[in-house]
Amino acid sequence: MRWWSVPILIALGWFAFTLTPFWALYGLARAVEARDVDYVDRHVNFRTLRLSLVRQTAAAARATIAEDPGLETRERQRLNEAAVAVALALAETMVTPKTVVDLLDDGWPETLDMPKPATASRETGLRVDGLVRFLALYAHSEMRGFRTVVIAVPPDAPRARQLRIRLRLRGWTWRLVDIEVTEELREQMAQKLSRTLAKMRSGDRAR
Image 1 (cartoon, rainbow, N blue to C red):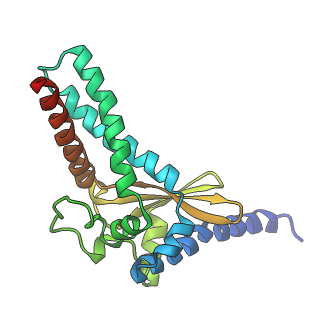
Image 2: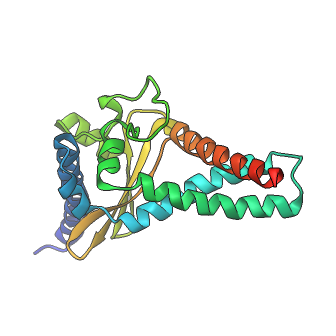
């Protein structure tokens, strides 16, 4: 074997490895299309996904709380703590195999009580239905070391309207561990959380 063939083989091996999460993504896309909640249940880490949604929702709610100039420091701290608790409850409701399928289908969880935007459609969801789509997803992916890849869905949408799907390799299997939701959905979740917190504040004042 000539010396120059070694780096070529290494490069080809790395390229082949970077394709493996997309085989898992293809299987997930087929499961979403078929509404196969059992497959999704086996290929999603729901614990990390719930924690991620709690972080995203609570951060958006904290930003809203911080913009309220009428809050005292103690009340602001109490509302921030309550925001995390309510976000946990919201994540428990939102992150199930059925709602994950619902979210990935068109980028919006229709089963939750939140108005669906006109932009949400099958085109904005997870689908791998041809070579062009596959190449676009691959081009808009980001390998983070050997065990993690982040994929933008849909790949041709503006950043604010993309889901950011994170897959992680565990053993020999790639699993979905995180979904960074679109900016609009994150705002809707934060508004729902803020309404709950507002009710809590009204109840405290009525006592």
